[in-house]
Amino acid sequence: MTIHANPGPIGIPGEPWGPREKSEWRSRQQVQRSYADEVVAAIDRLRDRFDVQQYGVLDHGHDGRYPLFAVRSRGWDDALPVMLVTGGVHGYETSGVQGALQFLDQRAVEYAGRANLLVVPCVSPWGYERIQRWNADAIDPNRSFRVDSPVRESAALMQLVAPLRDRVLMHIDLHETTDSDESEFRPALAARDGKPFEPGGIPDGFYLVDDSVHPQPAFQHAVIDAVAAVTHIAPADDNGDIIGSPVVAPGVIRYPLASLGLCAGITGARYTTTTEVYPDSPAATPAQCNAAQVAAVCAAIAFALSHAG
Image (cartoon, rainbow, N blue to C red):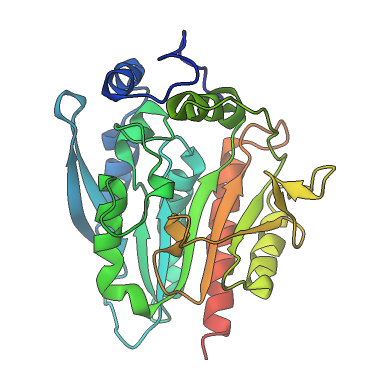
């Protein structure tokens, strides 16, 4: 989804934003779609097949109150491995949310009696409604999964997962990389932090982020192979990189997930990955992007189950 930058700069170039600048930024963020209609209603339609848990609520005053929901396997069995699926950590990344919901509706039943599923389709509902990467405090939730996190969205998810942390076998976090990353969000990040904006590029296609501390190349390869049947895989740039990181296998880069405070690093899971779909490609439709996320989730679970011993 292409997002147009808000008109006019905020703050003084070269100086980090303070409370006044952040308040001005927040005032510019307008509701563009409905979390209640597009996410909560879809979760409600799953209640006859899954257990739905409200694990928190975000009260943003005049901007509204947002209940946070997780969807669990019915008949949870502590003897089975736990598979964690998260979406919407960055609210503007549509297929992360809709892909998680589509997986629940169309494919999750296949794993009944084989795995416990815990799916959080939309971690950041305020951002979902405003098609925004940051939360209402102009902070990136996906750099904020830390002890005593100042980001309520991140802290709530960590609290939900904490009792299961050591039992999660696989965690897949569903994201997108959009053209608006370059046109809007990276310039906004530079302005917020009082730094110069350094132009970059957007990968044309799907890719994954593995954990550089505990890499699982065969797991990543299995996910890439499954997604390649649905949409194209991002090639490396002329430097052999994707978004500034070396490509270690087709469509795969690595980050130290936990130390960067990334969502995919919140558990002790053996198998972790972050998906990145490219929805602005002329070769990809919204339906393909959602299907790519579903394919990634299914491949991740299948690999984890087959290597659970």
